[in-house]
Image (cartoon, rainbow, N blue to C red; front, side, top):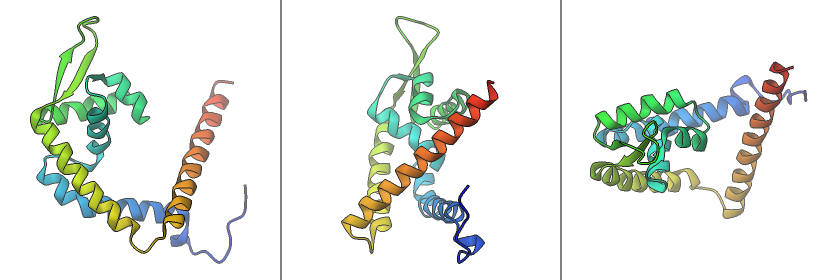
Length: 158
């Protein structure tokens, strides 16, 4: 493991800064999301559903890299809020397909607008090349964590 540069304080670590950024991001948008009946953790499910209406819960879990049980709870809450509906798959009744309701479609449109404004805010003060670099760094960090998880899982099977 590489040694961290000693000029960094504990609150300057990448982990800390990412957690702080995520906290600030969700806090800033939370009130706007709440007005739509959406919790920030539900955003990825709604986004994927807007792209793939009729996806199964398993497909959503796979697309979002989250546990099926997490998707189940999220879908139940979104259904209760009137944003999605479930329908049995015509070919396999064991599979539930998830669809946005009209209220859900309207919420997704509003969420896109909120998201666009937040993206503009996040980009303020950065050049396009800096944004490209940041994307590249974040993608690499994600890949690093995914690889570490795969290695950990493969050690568990030995």
